[in-house]
Image 1: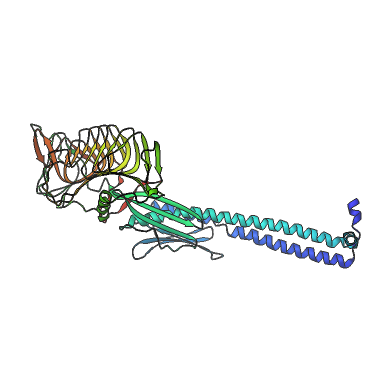
Image 2 (image 1 turned 90 degrees about the horizontal axis):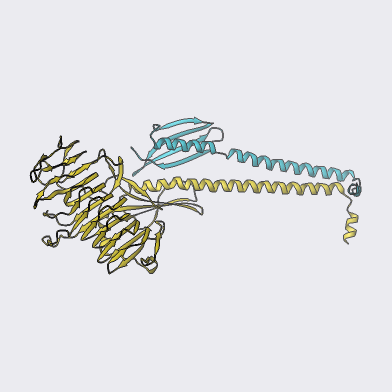
Length: 112
Length: 429
């Protein structure tokens, strides 16, 4: 009560200015928070990267045939071999259907 | 003054707002900092994982590469920035050493391996006998199992001192025609051997290792090669020497069974390995290599005798044990045994002797005469066989020897042939 006593009633203008300030601050805060959280979620490519690792392993062990295509959790995965002059490259390309985000991996391909 | 100010401040609501704003700002900045570090860490760990995956590319690039690198080169690989792969291929004894370093920002990952040509024990030649217009003769308890490449005269059973061939079948496997020359080695291999035997010396003071030091001497393959050189004989005993080290003597190296050598290279005209030694090393000699009884040389070891006799082809020493690799009974050598000579015509001396009950798991490449009394699991490339029995020399005879492609992994690595695919023999440290 001792603390409260110190704060005397404020004028109307003061209250309006204060509330506008508070609102602006809250809006900015929520925007920033929103952005942060959305970003961390959309940047989370763990599942698809894991899937790519899995596919890579399967290729190494001759479990799937090339070229290969599949759809995994909203991502289009395409695997093909590209022949350059001296060597064969294996390209793994994953594209997000919604955001068109791409993940490309290239590996040396050893023909068996 | 301050008191006066305090007195003037009446706007409690505004004060409160500012207080809340500061609080929120602090919280937000904390959150942002947290998210940023989180993303940064994630990127770092991703980079580290990618480094490891990409190093695989570097190694497979080197497996395809035929030429040696002088420098460490960056391989062209379309990938994200801050990421690079550098590779280096250098000779390591008779094999090759692959070195890959991948870098992401400041993080780097190094992978090194010994590589050599693939030997497929089911499909590669188990026996390759050069075409010398001389048939192969099998006597006693001899067995050849696997793919045999033989001269046009083929193979026949024979007699030595009253013993005939006791097997039920001549070759247990397929027979194919061989060629008038042995499969060619990669040219770099010969160059490397000549360099080791003639010119090799540790270049600077910091490259020397002190062999007098007691206990353990270790040098990683990620660091520069270190060496020891002496004009006198070197005796290795009571020591453990591991890694990227080359030991050279101008006279002789003797390995006692109290020494433990791992992955090192030994160079001397004469190399003697005492009875019951254990280790894993490459021995490069120009006159003689002897392996005692009950020795155990682990994979990938190599015994290499390189004889330069092109200019004096008729110089035959009186001592028959000169100019040969001798492996005594009860020893096991896993790896490659090689004899090279520069002269073309054959003689009647024996260049590789494998005693009774001795065993080679891996590969024999003999550009000369090979006397087989023990067992070879893997593959044998030779110009001729000889058998020294009851005072006579029998050319292209095998007496009580075994060559087989069993008891060995299907795919393993050996010395580097020209235009043959390569494989990893051992990961290094």
